[in-house]
Length: 378
Image 1 (cartoon, rainbow, N blue to C red):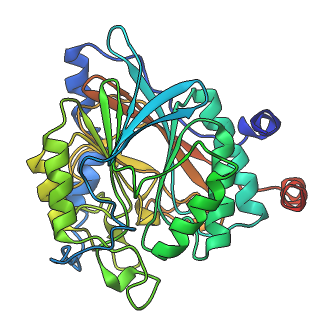
Image 2 (tube, rainbow, N blue to C red):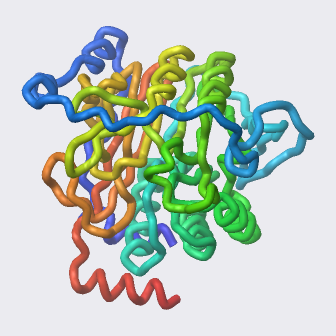
C-alpha cells in the first residue's frame, strides 16, 4: 500500500529535514527564535482571552483511562515486544547509546472520503520515507463509529504501532467501539485511552485524551470525551515521576499569549487554551508536546507555551510543542494566510532534544481526484 503512494510523495511534501543532532552550543542556538518570528510576535497584538480552564470533576474511565497498576500481559506488534501493566505499555528492547525516535503525527481527519483516503496514502509514504517507528493520532478522527473505524484502520496500514486518542469531536462510546473493531484486523492499533503511558528507550509518551471545554465539544448530553482538572493533575504526576524526557499527546492545547501560540482560533484570533495544562507542563518540566485541536494554528512548533519562540522545521530544540495541522483534505485557511489541503508531521527525539518535519499535501489534480475515487471504491 505504501509503495503505491510513493509516486505522489515527491509532488506533495514541503519540509525541512531535521539536521543531525547538533552539539550543545548549536542546540542552544536552535532554541533561539528566528529574528523574523520574534518581530512578528512583537508587532502583532495578542488576541483576546476567551479561554476556559479545565473544571474540577470526574471523567468517564472509558474516556480517560485510570492510571495505576494492573494485570501484566505481553503485546507483540510486528517484530517488537511490549509488556502491558495497567496504564503502561513498555517496549522490551536493549539499546546501546542514545536512541533517536522517529514518530509520525497526524490529527483532525474528521471524515472518511476519497480525498482523505488519498491523503492518508501520502502521509504513510511520508512516514515510511522518514523511517517512523510509531504513529500518533491526536484526535478528531470522526463523528460516528464507522468513520472512526475506517480512518484508524487506514492509518494502521502503516504496520507500526499506532496510538490514537479522541478529541472534541468523538463520542466516547463510538471511539471505544471503533478501536475494538478496527483492532480485529489491525492489532498494531492501540487506544491512548487505555494506554496512558508508552515507554520507549529514552522517551515516555503520555496521553491526555479528549477535550476540556464543553463549548467546543460536538457530542451532546455528556457523550463526548471530556477531561477535568483532576485528569491534568494525574498527567502532571505521571510525567514528574518519569525518569526520561516526556512527550505529551493531547487534542486540547495549553493557553498562549501571542499570535503564534497553538491555541489561537479564527476568525477573531482569540486564545482558548487550558491554563491547567500550562501548570502541568511547567510543573513536571514536560519538554515535548503535541496539541492538535486548533487547525488553523497548525503546521508549526513553538519552544514556549506563550508562543514567543517559534521552532523552525529541521531545527533541534530542548523544548518543542507541535501542532501538526489538519490531516483533512478539506481546504482550510491557516493563520499564515496559506490554504491547507491536508497536513501531517514527523517528530524526531534524541536525548533531551527534538525537531520536526512538515508535510503539506498539494491540492489534488483532476487525475488525483479520479485516483482517490478508485481507492475509495476498492
